Length: 254
Image (cartoon, rainbow, N blue to C red; front, side):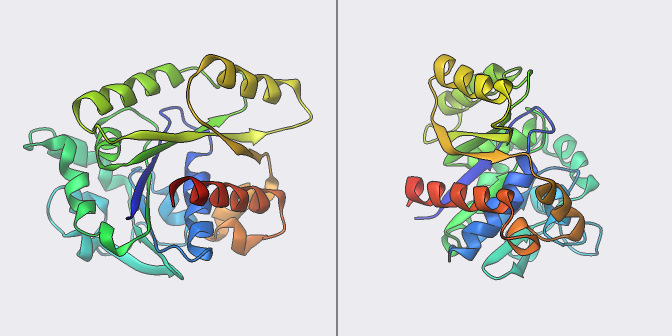
């Protein structure tokens, strides 16, 4: 049975898209058939996987407003076993067009349900906002993965995200669960990183991944080349950490 995982945090700059890119790549490398869905109008997941977000053809926008089917929207074999539904700035207009649609929170779910049997994992990169696109992602998903940056304001807004997830579970998707929090930009040399991890473990009753993603220059460089970290520098600490995260996720969901 395939799993749909939304990678969500309404706070920007927490490593959400970096996690979506590299988790997709490592899951595919480990033999899982993966669909990466770019639901952020910035289109960074798209360009980070080497796909031209402004090329002719269908994107998440056309799919969500009903101008294309999922089959007509998927870009196949971006890398071996990895497909993508790309995005660009046009997606920012989808929310307005979806607003008056019937069962507007279920539009993405209906689209992905049509193709989910082809994949082991569908990963959705959500926008950094608790808007209708994110609500659609949570309605479509089985699990939510929450990246948290190991910084002073890390927990700011997390309570709101958890409240949204709980409301989503109550009203729209009773099957939704939290896969876990993954700590990003972790620096073992600082007390702050350890304190953020401790705070989450002590104050929030949610699962936490053992793997922590370190601050790593190679991770920051890879998207500008349009390739994930396993292809850019497989021996970097960032690559080793994302491979461990993929292994941990596979154990958790399969």
